View 1 (spheres, rainbow, N blue to C red):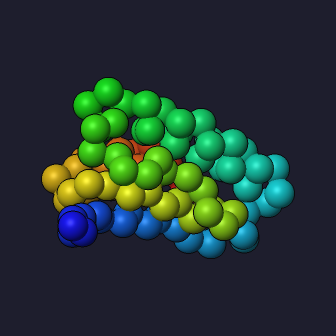
View 2 (view 1 turned 120 degrees about the horizontal axis):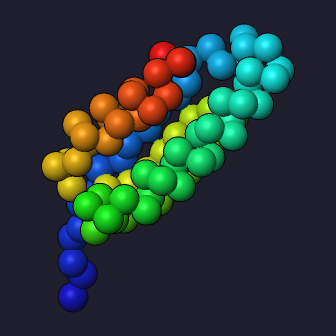
Length: 86
């Protein structure tokens, strides 16, 4: 028997990061990689993460949650952690 499962996709994009000088963009990319490793390891959030957060295309972030309960917390964490970009 097939079981229906719903997920919530969380997508984010660092707007206009391609306009950053090369060194600043490289620094942002390194910060994104390190920050997403931290996000995926957070003990309180791990059970709700169906597919870990990752960089998909340059500066775009994607992750898959088992429900919507953590969207607000994760969105605020992303904005606070990567506040240098919109």
